[in-house]
Length: 278
Image (cartoon, helix red, strand yellow):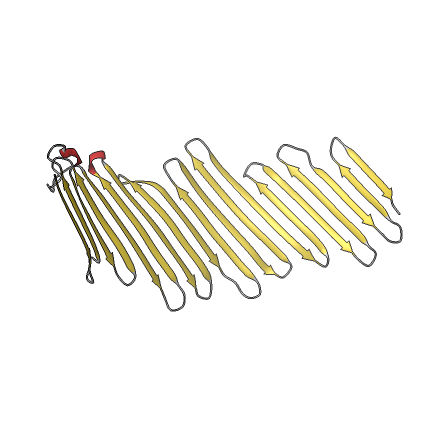
C-alpha cells in the first residue's frame, strides 16, 4: 500500500494545487489518483479536477477517469453594468457521459434598465434544456414602460412567454401577456389583458383571458364613490368558457334616504333586491 499527498498554495497560477495518489496491491480497483488545480484572476476563477482509478490508474489512456471543470467570471463597469458567467463541464468516459452547463447573466443600469439571463444544458452533444429571460424597462419619469420575454426549449416542451406592462398615463395601468406552449401532443396559446383605471373617482378593472378559439375568462368591474351624496355604485360582469354571462349591479346610498339595491342577471336567473335601513 502506498499513499502520497501534495498541497500547495502558490502566488502564481495555479493558486491552489492538490494531488493525492493511493495504491493498493491487494485490491487495485480502489487505487486512484486525484489532481485539483484552482486558478484565481482579477475577474474570474476556475477549477480543474481529474480523477483516475482502477488497475491502470497511472496510465493516461485509463478509461476509468472523471473530469470536472468549472469557471466563474464576473465583470462590473464604472456605471454599474454587470455581467457574469458560470460554466460547468463533467466528463465520464466509462459511462459515455459528457455534460456542459452554463449560466449567463447581465444587467445594465444606463438610461434604461435591462436584464438578460440564460441557462443552457448540453448532454452528450445534444441540447436538452435552454431557458432565457429578458427584461427591458424604457421609462420616462414619472411614467414607466416595462416588457420581458421568457423562453424554454427542450426535446419534450417548448414554451415562449411575453409580458408587457405600461403606466404611461397617470391613472391608467395596463398589462398584456402571451404564452405559447408546444409539446409533442398539444400546442396552446393564451393571451391575458389587464387594464386598471382610476379616473375622476371611477375605478375600473378589465380582465380578459382567451385562446385563439375561445374566451376563458372575461371580467369587467366599474365602481364609483360619490362622497358628496354618500353614494356607491358598482357594475360587474363575468363571462367564462363554461358559463353564461353573469351581471351583478350593486348600489348603496346613505343620503337623503338610506337604501341598498342588488341586481343579479343571468340567462336562467334574474333577481332584484331593494332594502332600506336606518
